[in-house]
Image 1: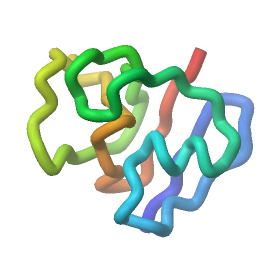
Image 2: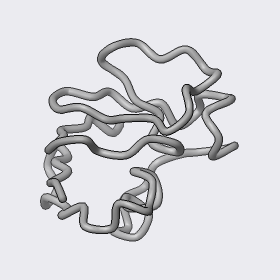
Image 3: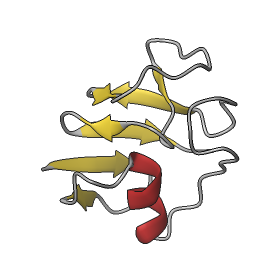
Length: 84
């Protein structure tokens, strides 16, 4: 279990580790754009300001060290995201 922090928004408690980060954001009414949900296209790419995420399968889309693809990753610790 971990916390998800978003700039100027209430923290979200990540309790269901069967849900991707994107599903958790959607469940909490946070707008985050996504297309494929499989790590192929990179349209959901978010800035990862703090913390760590893990990918059960390596995404095909390139991801910088300070980014994550919420469609296919899971928080590994408390995280802080920047969502435009």
